[in-house]
Image (cartoon, rainbow, N blue to C red):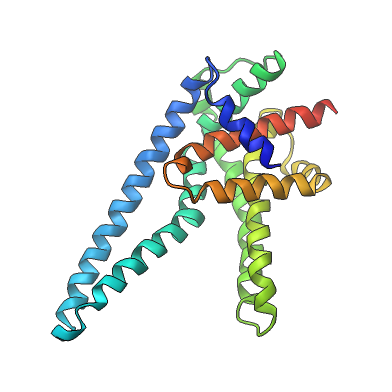
Length: 235
């Protein structure tokens, strides 16, 4: 599964595909910077209030507070940024998946312009929200396991694997939705390739934590998932 993400990164450099990567990349960049600046501003206000209530000899605690901020930002980035960025850039990711499939197979789906993809945004975004609706109740159950003694050790592993599974489903949705495959069938298709799903999702999860590389992870994951879908459908 990780090899498909690697292939996805290579596909981003293919002439003719680059233009379909730029818009999602710009959206991700602006969203990331805006998200960071907003949290940093709120953190600075809180830090100012916090310092005013500390005695002078405890001012060193503000350093710990900023370290906590950056650690929290990374966590929020992983679990919030990726989800929201996928929803916002969904129409462009769908178009990218279409062009990658055409490059790999030579089979053109019903041709779509960028404007036509934007007009299809409500349907494409609705699919992403449907995946989110699948994710949230199951994620809540796993989070509850964290407060149960002994079980919480296994909850950490389960949480990691479930998020990898969720990421695989998220990116498989783009090529499958282009073929109007129902989400229930996509999930069944994914279950038949469980090991590949985990490998792909884990690799996306890990690369999302690498600075600068994470900006390219979303389009690379779309391209990689499309190649996975195309090759599996051929077989």
